[in-house]
Image 1 (cartoon, one colour):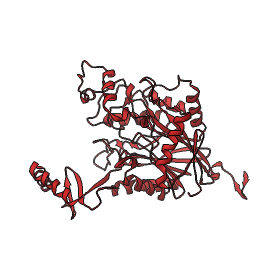
Image 2 (cartoon, rainbow, N blue to C red):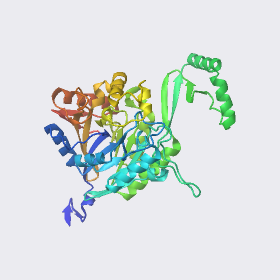
Image 3 (spheres, helix red, strand yellow):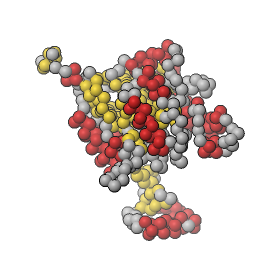
Image 4 (cartoon, one colour):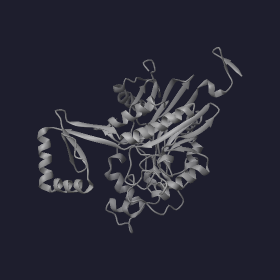
Length: 449
């Protein structure tokens, strides 16, 4: 028993204080424990020094995964289960499994990942044997208190979302989905041109026939559907988006539940979509993240676009819209299906994996720009139930190194560290967030929180 601030404290959790290390996407394909660079081990120690250590597990775990799904998240990311042990060695103890790669190997891959995580007693949220299981919080008991995590993804390849079950049919294993609706706003002249294209090409006639066959509801006045996208006339062209109402409410139900069942509640959101400019999260992402805080979350951990996005302090709670890549080792995958070779016009029976990665690195912007290999580790301190500090440690993932080194994080130093923190300063400023840079560490100013 302790007396603190004039009150009696019987349990450590009553202090409502905890230290959290937060990272973005861990796309791991190789071991971590052999490496001993000082700046790599210093990063590991920063993670291990926190009570809660979070990352997004953006791979499928399984030995000899047999059936790659028809639709993947960009690449079929199936890896040996032992690699999650490497993330545990790094210090991680809390994982999201809700992302656009969770279903890369179909229901077999989902169930395999769940088995491997459960057999290791690693706490994870965001995928499940059915929709309810995927939506439900995961819990971790620490001396500092009970921690909950809800994992959700707005980036959902066809067939990856979990399905609900009922008395006469089992649910579909999958990830926890946050679907959303985008409306494109165009001028009246552009709308007339769009309708003309639809008419001349036969798109309009085919859409009308489908609508009749499916008994679809008529469009809202002023809206026009073109190739499954919604358009309306506006004097200010652009786009707006909103979360799917049912997905959002179903998810927030579990945030509210977790708030009542735990001392600390966190939400992980995987989302790629942008508000036109890639560095700005889409409107629906902002809406959902703020709603999670309103429902009781202590913080939202965002990731997905493979780059840094802003930090917002909303009602005294942090929203990390994207912490970028913690690990990005897709170029050293060891097995991919023939479709991956065909994607780059390679003969799947003659070409090798190095040929695939040569082709991919040469064509895709994400493999060429250094912003995809720069990120931060956030250390968040909650004291007496209130946000007390956010420290930001810049990382680089072998930004300009050869392929065998690229993708593994290490603490950034010197000019590179300053540049990464300045980028995050610039991205966060529109949200009213100030980041103070002191040497190679950033600190979020909480004076206006």
